[in-house]
Length: 566
Image (cartoon, rainbow, N blue to C red; front, side):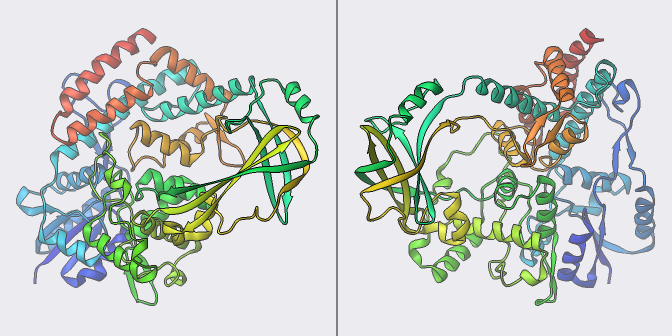
């Protein structure tokens, strides 16, 4: 019997899919791109600046792999060739590279899209094979050439002017954000403001009472001495004068997109962007479950900007939630479904969620590394939470008097857990909710100390890997497949460093590079222009623009700026 041949990107994914399909299929892995732009011509761009035709060459080390495939195709009788590289622009371009390098004719191959590595999804893809999407390929080529033009040209100039290493379309905007945040912090430090706090001990818990006015608003002092004068008038005893209760709802977050997963993994688990990206890819491609004696893809494709979840999974999730906690915990019209979709969302595939609800994290923990288990549990619980009812809390505000000055503190007591029950310990802490009140049966509190503190609630904070990715997503800059690179590049180039908490701090070199880029190429290296380039790439993906006109227009504008600098 003639066999079918499938091309993937990952060798790990190959093992998982092979276990589903059996011996009638032969699977090869490209291990990423097979070719790259040549370093030739003006600025080593590898692009003819008259026709804008790019020139490619095989990536060193891939020649033998391609040769072995060609020999296999000559030697064996293959009934069908399927290109099942990753379901995004880059995967589409790699599929096209296979076609070109193996000189396949259109009738020899078809495209498969695997959004999750499950028998259902694989069989569904095989039953409905597609053509290679030329628009996506063209968009990816446009991105490669665009990044080469900006990166190589600006890097060449920077190396001469500042002895700096590199610049890049998104990399330099990320540096700009980090530098501007640092200047904002320093500016804030020059105009510190202060509040007065009473620190009280209630059993083993600490309660902080903050000074308020008659309307319940926090009193902020511009002058520290003024605050100290008020503090000196206060006694140790704070007398309860009012207790106000309000019903509040806390809504779960939307399903996981790449930027949100990276942020949550950093916040909850302390994982770096690179760490989360690597583990999520492994969970998607397949993990050997010893109890099941099979390789299983545990989550859907981890590079996505869509909150969409298929109806089949949603129905299974509702059944799971009802069986475990009851129908009241299901939210059949989640609030995130009603939000207007952002214009820059590609929506090519679903949100990141588990492929099988029957594989509960605790039940397969033995088959996972500790890091895989922690990330899978986060994805599992977050997905369920996004489909669950909001939590209902009772917000209690306590108002105290001390020498005719008012102070207040509050607490949020859980009345109905809703989605919080998915990961109670983590979510109670995240949303500052308590299961029972800690401020009961008292008419006054005694302060252990009264302090004048710097007011930091609106103080700008440095970006970490998670928050910078969220900022990029909000600005429409970069794409899920590239989020894991920017921070590492800045650290490698010595443009930024990280403190003990993982926050980015620009170096003197980074500040100098950003200053020069903004002076000379400020119209190019900024959030709005970079986001507009992403939108243009999206238009090419949708067939509403083309490579030639996009790159030609960009180069004509960019080259004029280059001439002013040289």
